[in-house]
Amino acid sequence: MQDVFQRRHSIGLRQYHHTPAAAAAAAGVQAFGLILPPGAPNTSSATPNTSTKPVTDLPVSHHRILNPGMILLKNHITIRDQVDIVKICHTLGVGPGGFQQPGYSSGSKLQLQRMCFGRNWDPETKYRERYRNDGSIPPPVPPLFIPLVQSLIQDAQAHLTSANEIPLMRPDVCLVNFYTATGRLGLHQDRDERPYSIRGGLPVVSISIGDAGEFLYGHTRDEDKLQKVVLESGDVVIFGGKSRLIFHGVRGIFPNTTPLPLLEKIKLRPGRLNLTFRQF
Ligand SMILES: O=C(O)CCC(=O)C(=O)O
Ligand SMILES: [Fe+2]
Image (cartoon, rainbow, N blue to C red; front, side, top):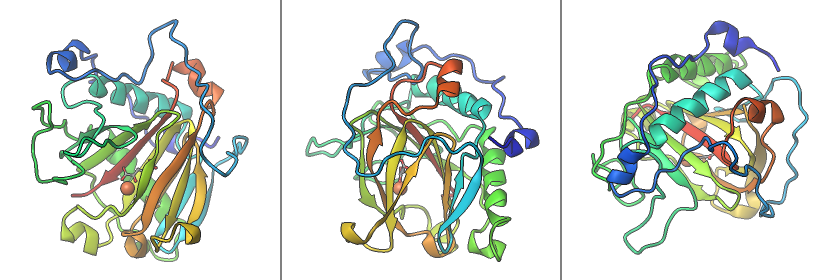
């Protein structure tokens, strides 16, 4: 694995102290921690509901242009930074405004756990409601993530003919998703940010950690015409410019594909963590 990112800066954890899970419990929400207590099983027996085999043995970083304005930075986040990201998301995830399973008033639920940074996003009220249903306000985007995301955009720009294809942005909103072995996310566009962000093609920056997932994307709702790519731990996908409104979704998770070097450092719950940063 290349250490490009880590050399530039490492995320660090100094200001993240543990928030007791009791805070979430007191608010009536079952705390969902990413880091399992010692002794808890961290493998899953689920069968994947995906069609592509994960590629788990690509040792070096590389990039792939997926579409105009859309790039995959493969194996780009070092294990050390992945560990730090998990720790920060765990700490915030068990506190007020932490992980919850989002749902509709009809009672149907998204097949994932989610927490928001910067602004609450709800499947029905989008970004309009300030408060989450536990009465909390989402924590801001952790300041340490801002230079990380900006350096990822700059890394992407270095592979493009023109930096305008994926403009720089300052993330002030992030959706943090966790998919267990049966998790998925239907095809959608990320289109609820302000017109300035959408029309300006300010990119969505997506970081994946843990189990691999099958990611579908394309400029069509027609599932048969979509392209797919397996996203593994440390992969970054950035879509902005002409791809800002690309349809995308997660068809399924490949259980037990979290890289061993990550599991040796942290007891990550079985599943896939994904963070999508945006500028509202
Ligand atoms: O999990 C992913 O890779 C995508 C997440 C996503 O598209 C979203 O939260 O809007
Ligand atoms: Fe999305």
